[in-house]
Image (cartoon, rainbow, N blue to C red; front, side, top):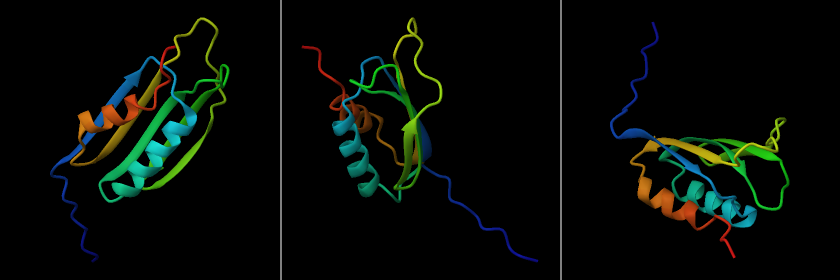
Length: 112
């Protein structure tokens, strides 16, 4: 009989965030690429629904496992009367909410 592998789940948590301002595509992509390369061993899953500036009513979705990420337009656009929000969730070990929040805040489009 095969022995079951035991996983150490200590320090595993999830961090969820919501943003009411559109993301800048280039800044978001750079942040996520850098984050997932640096923390590939610690971020087990990432997923989200995103609103990007300059992309009309297109809603984007992404999901990742470690440093591998799939990203693309959703089949369901934002409705004209719907509030554009982005929601992200990270699952991993030793996640720092403040660090993630600060990095993502830098990716938001600044009001001029």
